[in-house]
Length: 159
Image 1: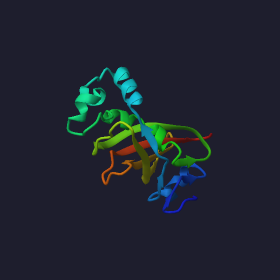
Image 2: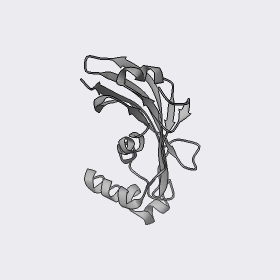
Image 3: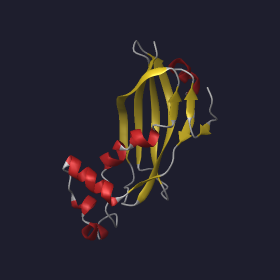
Image 4: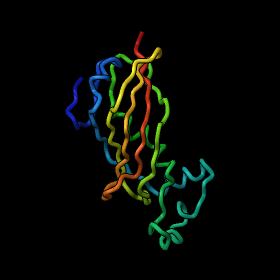
C-alpha cells in the first residue's frame, strides 16, 4: 500500500492488498464540461430538453444558464476517477455497478468538476476483489458536490 489518507492516487500492489487501502481518499484533476459536450450528450441520448440546450431560455430559468444532464456528469465518472485507484497484477478491472447515486447540484455549461474517491470496503470473490468506493464529483466554486455515487468495481488478478 502506498498512499497518505488523502492523496492523488490510492495504490495497491495487487487486488488482495486493496483491503489495506480501505479508508484512503484520492482526488483527481479538474475537467470542464462545456456546451459542446452537453450538446453531444443530448444528441446521443435524444434528451433535448431546453434546460440543457437553449441558452437564451435557460438564462432566465432556475439555474441562470444551460446545465449538463445529470447522467452526463455521471457518465464522466470513469474518466474522472480512472487514475485515482491503481492496482498492480490485475488482468481486468471492471465496473460492477452502483449502489446509490444522488445528483446534488446542477453543473452549468463551462463548469469544472473533479472526482474524489474513498475506498470504503473490499471483499474477496471467486472472480477477484470487489471494491466499494464513494465517489464525489466536486463542482468548482460550489459548497455542494454535483454528484455522489457509491460505486462497485471488481479487480481480477493475473493468473
